[in-house]
Length: 216
Length: 200
Image (cartoon, rainbow over all chains, first blue to last red; front, top):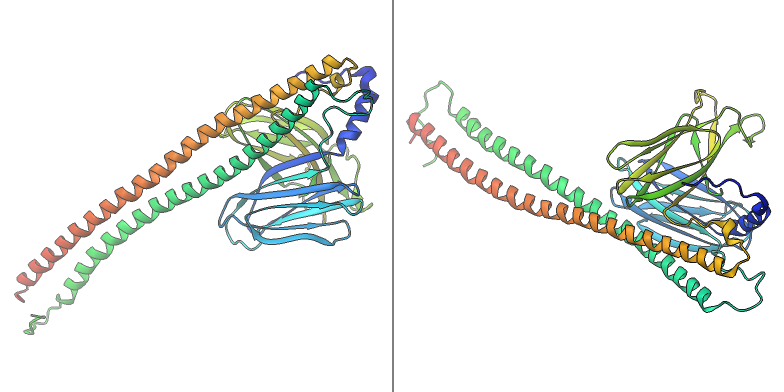
């Protein structure tokens, strides 16, 4: 990766750009949530920013998790139990640290892999209109529409990848379960049948002579 | 660096990144330590570092370095699959100190999203569009790589399903055969037994 130093005279411009760009952030993290665990994430949001929280459970158990989103005052904005996938949009009513938690406390021994995507603010415009004298040229509008289309393609791809991972996880679970249960059944079958015969034989093996005929 | 979460002092926290091969992943982090006296997280804790370990899908460790309290790490994925990025502080203090926690700020970027901001500020119109086009081309490459990765995964999925199918069939046949042969053996064995016992 090329070194990113030596910005020199452009540094204040860069800082200004960074401040503007800071308004829009998207964090997506896939993490493992052990059983009986709760994991919380915090984010500082300015008032009036439109935010979206989206989460999905990829592997583990019944593929569900509890989710809870609270504002800086502790007021619960969103609370759902045992949800597999959901998307929640809200506008920050005040400045402060918002907190959202995923809980796997209802599960006794399954680890869950959870993906979430927390989008804060809208993306900055591709061609900022501060120093603009004319409207966007055709090239620029084409760039903007291609950019929007690609963003949505990448978004769909992410969702598809998650669903596919989930389906594959279920298929692999099924495969393992079928293999183990089949082997187990075959062994039980053998053990029980052979055991039955020996047990029956043992009923008739006492040394006392008996003249009763067993079942005609 | 906005999103943060808390972990224990000696705890290791891992996140998973499912990426196609040949993708650059860049992570920015900042770690702060809880100060019991001030009842707040210190802005910078001297001597506090972070071990960052990245494991590739094949189990091989491709990055394992100690960084300072704030830093950037990056790696390029050679294989496609789930890369596990683990964070652990180099704190040697035992977690006996009550309420001792670490706050980790994290920002991970995968694939494209690399806007060279300094070039964007160029006054030249043509240059600006050129830069945007480069960015778009990068995005398209990322989409293509993801699609190739998707094809690999679908193949794996299909193999697993077919394996399950043949497993079920094979084991059902084996169990039926066991059932029949053991049944025959049971009857024969009991018949011989009763004949030898002069009960029949």
